[in-house]
Structure formats: structure tokens, C-alpha cells
Length: 297
Image (tube, rainbow, N blue to C red; front, top):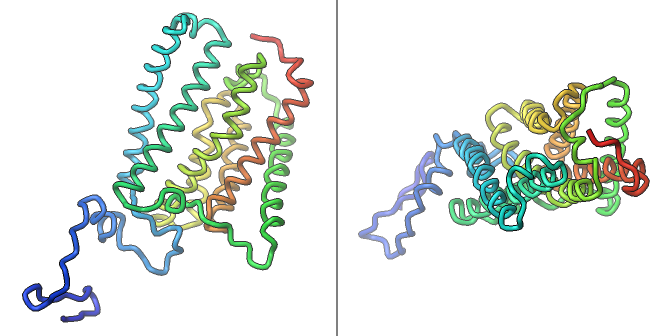
């Protein structure tokens, strides 16, 4: 058996009784060789040494776009079976809101299932830990105190954003406001925003996108880039509220900074879910328990 500083140990198959290991799949072999995302620097934090790269990010975008189309077609068919025509979905605000919320919920499940399948079958790695859901290391701080601190910070961030947003006059009606015109739409959106959206968005942005960008441009640049992408993704919901979009970019940067400092998506998730929960709680109070809604357009 021979050794070399730059190459792994090699042995002569004819003189060795050791069994020959099974070859890796082409996808897995490519993911751990230089040139796929560049040589993996052993000095990088473990949470950045992921087996996917830029091509995988582009493919995820393609899956999201095609998934949106397929899920929409299935929902149109499902609504038709239930006696709701596509024309009615377009014209009736409540049905349109239900369609959009269900579309987003189903697409979220599809994307999580795709990533889970990729981790298990392409990379042969556990799903949640590989995409950044690692234990939150708290050092000498009690774990409960660290978790409560992140939750409290998310609520404080929501308060600061709300105060800052109210300082900017915005006469434009933002698209997201259509979901707060009736009880069913508001409840469904709040459920999506607390139960599912933080899991999906943190997995994709802070778990899947952030490590690739950090390896290519550095951690500080990745915090800014990933946070900005997060804010801009929600721009269609806040279109016309430019200050609100800018504030959401800042929120995305704060979430990503927490993920970078703690090396786990758990931190950004706790900030995210508490941030969303506080905003929705504020609307619940403002609407007197869903008894008073703004006038429908």
C-alpha cells in the first residue's frame, strides 16, 4: 500500500485481500470532488460543507416554477370537481384567496419533499441536519433562556418593523391586503405564515441557499445576498409598498445573520416564526378577534 500527501492511500487489487468498495453514484461522486463547487476547505465551518452547488440551486428554481404550474392545474381541477369554476376563482375574492393559499401550501410541501428526496437518494445524507437544522449550541447559557431570547428578539423585530413601516406614508393598496378582508382568508394565511412558511423559507434560504453563497463569496456577503433575496421574494405581496419591501430585506438579513452566527437554521426559524406570530397577533387584536375587517375593495 502506498501513501502520498496529495492522494488517498492506494493498494494493488492483486495483492490485497480487502474488498473493493462499491463505486459512488455519479451525482454523489461529483458532489465531493473538486470542480463541482470547488475544493471543500476543511477550515470551513461544518454547516457550510454541503454537497450541493449552484446547479442545484438553479434546478430548485426550475422545480419551483414547474411545481407552481402543476399544482395550479391540479387545484383548478379540484375546484371544478367541487363545483367552483375557474372564472369564479378569478372573480370571487374569497375563492381566489383560498386558491392562492392552497397553492402556496401545496407547493411548499412539494419543495420540501424534493429536497428531502435529494438529500436521501442523491447525497445519501439525513435531510434535516444536512439542510442546516442542527442543535442550537448555547454554551453556558441555559437552552431554555437561549430559545426564549430568540423568540423575544423576533417579537421585538416585528415591533420595530411595524413602527418603521407606519412612519412611511403608503397610499397604494398592497396585494397582501386582499387576504385580510374576510375571516377564512385571514385564518388560512395566518396558519400558513406560522406553521408552514417559516419551515419552508428557512430550509430553502438559510439552509440551502446560504451555504452555497457563503462558500463562493464569504459569510458576510452571503448574509447580505441571502437576506436580500428573501426580502425580494416577498416583493409581489407588498408591491407598491417600497418602504415595506426594504424593511423586509432588512428582516431577511437579520434572520440570515442569526443563522450565520449560530451555524444552525433553528435560530433563524425561531426569529422567523415569532416575528410572523407577533404580526398576526397584532392583526387579531386590531380586528377585534376577526369581528372587524377593512372595507373590501
